[in-house]
Image 1 (cartoon, rainbow, N blue to C red):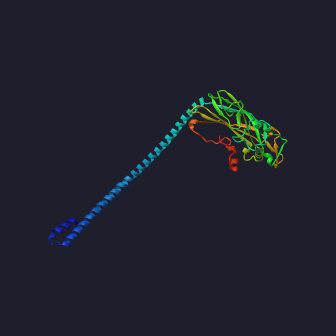
Image 2: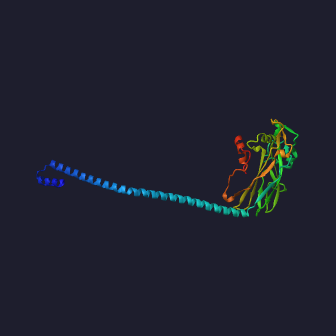
Length: 325
């Protein structure tokens, strides 16, 4: 109605309008148009708001559905990875079983250390790689049998090397030929060009001997300081077994000879001597279960079987005295 009244008044007086009047009218018309547009926009905004309010629960529900689907997809990925891992393990175990069927299986049996031990006053440590081996006949000739009657004071008299000899056998109980390698201070008894390496056919037996020891001072330390377990009272040997297959095996047979053959004359350990009886020395040999490595698995760096026993002592000393296999 207001708009119609405006147009009626304008028509009746149009011939009397001045320029200023026309400007005011045009401005008024623009203001009205703007107001109408604003009102229309407001109505549209209210409508959109009502529509959004109606749609918001649906959007929230869709977000929840999408999140649930994403979680389910992640769970499917994890499940697929676990299935792949399980399938890989099955394939690997099957391959290992086939390898085991045709691999050699070498077993080691060792005697107790020979009593009494030998003392070599010309040595103050185990031989290095380029030096005369302990089991060489010249080394054995220059050593003397240790005696409980001899006393060793806490000075340079304890620098000599006291070492033990033991013998053992290697038996190939597997289906194929094995190549066996001994550590430097072990050798096969049978005279061959390679004293520390030989082939062992299925069912074949090979005799070997091993010599190892510490200085008298180190043996005394093992008796005087037994806690934590002291590796100065132990000697270590590793026997390595190979086969000739591309996807074959490496076996490691780890052996420890240990005891406390040196005892104190008095509680001060100022003087020590060899134990009077072999039982008092507590010397023995331990052969650990064979550790098998499959070539198809790649190289491994497993701890040695005695690492846990002597770990506390090595931490206190800040060093390692054994070499890895």
